[in-house]
Length: 89
Image 1 (tube, rainbow, N blue to C red):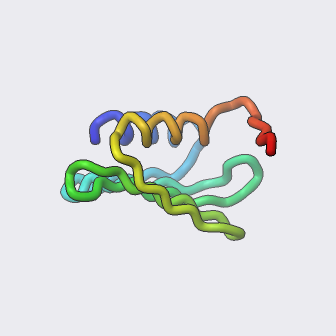
Image 2 (cartoon, rainbow, N blue to C red; image 1 turned 30 degrees about the vertical axis):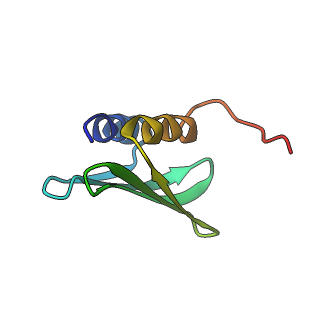
């Protein structure tokens, strides 16, 4: 897990989010306000292979397990993209 901490640090600096990286466990925490809602995000490796992402707002909690860092990074980039996305059912 090398690219995710760098990406989240860059986002945190740009958006003034709180950022914390735990060196031993490789966990990354960020929190702040995004799209008008307070959020907390925890990203951590699981068994050196998987990436677990916890995204919490006051209204909901999402826990996602990714099979690779690349997949997790792509999802995080979508979450913090500047453009608004519309879900079509």
